[in-house]
Image (cartoon, one colour):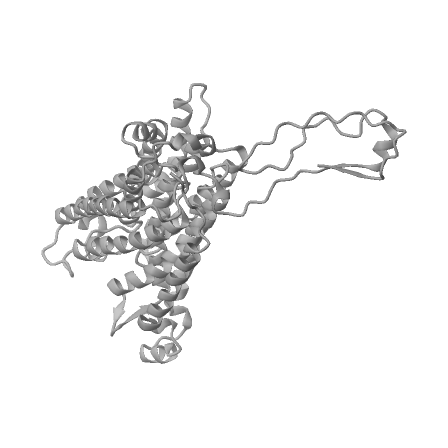
Length: 498
């Protein structure tokens, strides 16, 4: 079947329509929150606020910066491990995130921040929008290299919509706790993406198998993404928590869990290799599993050693998933998971949901104190006749809801993306930047100094392999050796050999 990947008409029109729609909707619905409005000085006088430092911006913006860097730099560079797909990994992640945060501000605004006919916009909104888009970045990892930018925009539109509905039901109706998004972000994003890639199964993907691997420098770039994510993950899990002890505790628990997952990842990676070597895929991904696994319980009284235990097991199960489960899913269940998001986000996300349920079920005034348990869970306050067992059950219901929404939504969106007019590449052209990007030829030049021509009578060309201009469409055969140059020949003062 012939595939038309020329997006000259379709992509610009789609991007333009989406952005104009965003402008119109923002103009109709979105207004500044009072803390971002010019009337803030009147609010200060009314509430007897003495300093601008009391503005929410100064509490939340540092966390927002960290989360923003994770979404655009961390997730983007983590997916640059493919040898011929670096432009697309970073560029398409940039594109879907930029559109996704705008749509998320609207969707989440209608559900959570709608007052007197308008969405009030503050720093808290943009943090929540980044959380929503993080789920889209997770799902992107499953279809990386196999979809067009058109498909990614459509997929992001539907996923942000479903994410917002799922989040609202889970947090506001079921009243589950999920500070770091183990259920709403990671579990939902992972199984949504896995379901989409299952529907979009490509039976001849082996024709692009060579490009599906990494090279030395691409793995190094991906490791940059890993380090960004690893460093900023405590901010990610604590950004939406209450100021004070809850936010402090969430950062500490995440910090410890991440550290533990690094050591267990290295342990298992060495064990599963026949010669005891480390696998860069494991180090890039499974070392982050502790941050995913501790997300739901991050602000709970998990205890420091409990956080270490969560990271310990998440690192083990994630690494084993990359070593054994991913090949099984592809060969038996036809799930072509490019980045292994099932192992980094899916399994640890489920672990995180279970850990959150158990921790909530064992919460008590003896652990939290009477005011603390009201502040953390609302027992005896807005949750009338609510107890720890009911909270534990609501956590499990939240996990099951996220899985159900992801699977059903992924099937529907997968069939929409399977339509033939989205500009997707053929199976033999997957994982290749030049399908959608202008990729310049690589030309290496060797400079031969003037004095070299006078001192050596045998050859002016160094004994090194020369790299000719290469393109993705062809492989140039090796260059035959250059014949010796006689000193009698008039040599130029300097020569450039291509």
